[in-house]
Amino acid sequence: MSNTVHDNQHFKKIALFFFAYRSFNEKPDIIAEKYNIQRVHHRLLFFIGNLPGLSINELLTLLEVTKQAVNGPLRQLKDKKYIITDTDESDKRIKRLFLTESGKQLLDELTEVQIEQMESIFNQLGKEHEDSWIKVMEAYAVERPNSKYFFDSL
Amino acid sequence: MSNTVHDNQHFKKIALFFFAYRSFNEKPDIIAEKYNIQRVHHRLLFFIGNLPGLSINELLTLLEVTKQAVNGPLRQLKDKKYIITDTDESDKRIKRLFLTESGKQLLDELTEVQIEQMESIFNQLGKEHEDSWIKVMEAYAVERPNSKYFFDSL
DNA sequence: AAAAAAGGTCAAAAACATTGACATAATTCA
DNA sequence: TGAATTATGTCAATGTTTTTGACCTTTTTT
Image (cartoon, rainbow over all chains, first blue to last red; front, side, top):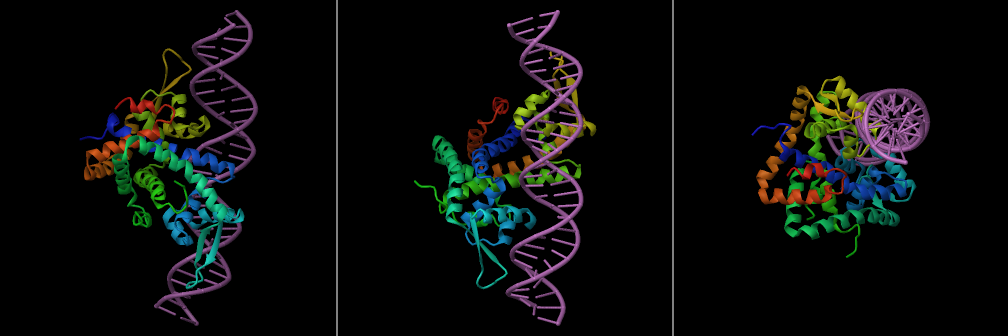
């Protein structure tokens, strides 16, 4: 079976990823703008909020970016009191990252619209579709370093 | 049902989108690098290849960016002979975009790895999962302007 | 004591996208 | 026909995100 530019079946499925990802990020992006932060900050809040006590290195592995890429945004979140850091007891080189109460509130606001959107779709299509979607996305996600932190919990 | 940072079920599903999208783009990004182009160029090739005769404005609507954002990459693709433009017959203001033979070859190479990855996942999980995944992603994608161009074809 | 690891920071550069302004050619509308 | 609109192109300034590379401190491990 050849892979040509005329194969609409495949093209459509590829396009779906592009379009869906945009719709998935659209609303939180608008909310983030109100707080003068960007999608990177949202990601940082997301991972710190869901994996409290995360170290910088663990964060870098999850995001697959350099420390320089998170250093600025992380400092800004700290300045705005959305996150706090705590030195690890047993290894004082390691910083543990946590959300503050206002950080949790902001993350909740950002997350809420994504959950509402998702629940609306899953409620409309049914539980089997939700389970299937999760399985497919998991198959993609397992390639990512440290993504197992998320899959173990479910 | 409250939406808190402790709700692992929701967090996991949100994280899946992030991780899966990265895995989906990883391989074509590496191929693009070999050709000294970036993901933007890949997108342009993708939409022009799948919707031959697309106008600039239609492209801008699909990508949801400004004309300045595509002007550069589009010129580079033209310089590299991956695309050609043709003036519309009935409205000579409009440029129609097409892939050249080498443009089609490049797009095929970029697309191939995404299709292989996707087919591997769907073959492993089964047809029902594929259909469910498509339905969910479509529910996300319908919000996008002009994305109907793709859904009509299936 | 030396090496490695975790984190921080500075600088240069590239990639990506924006707003704003201005221009041309073609089409439509009053 | 003349005016307005549309499609496209380009220049400039700006902002964000991210990268590579270098260098540094502190702490832990060997």
